Image (cartoon, rainbow, N blue to C red; front, side, top):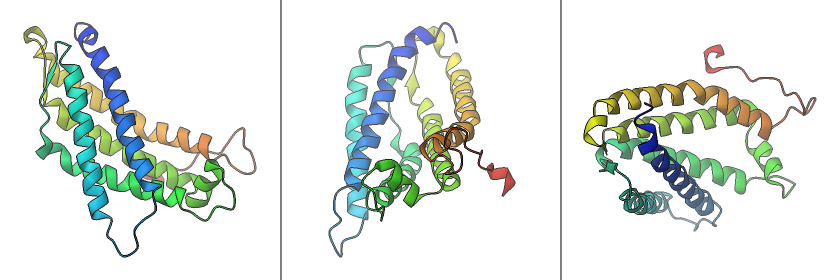
Length: 194
């Protein structure tokens, strides 16, 4: 891992920017008015294509590093499509909700309770982790690092899945503090409690 990290760290930083750009495009689209009588599918298809365009720009930048990535969309499309649909629906629900306030936090609180918001975030994180796992097969590292690829991919997936639920809970607690105790919100139940 120590050998691979210097090669992967700049790529991982670019990747974070790429994912922020994708999510931003989806959220901005969700804020646009819907055309009455039209289905969401064309918009979601256009967003899927937009994410592929963002991927292409990312791959052009990765060309500067000793890492080659050939995206195998047949493997990642099911996870990405579900993630786009889920994020778009959630953003639409929040942005077009019936909140009496113009504050985003109030709109979020009107659209979701803390537990439901944590579950939404957890599912988005899980889908992203699955997409990353599928993408790991697309990464071509320099010769000496090839044997490490599967180990790195397994470790990364394990870490992502292990932190997904606690991170979702923490974000939900900060975004939607308990009305009775904003500074120390009570922890929502975990999925195992249901």
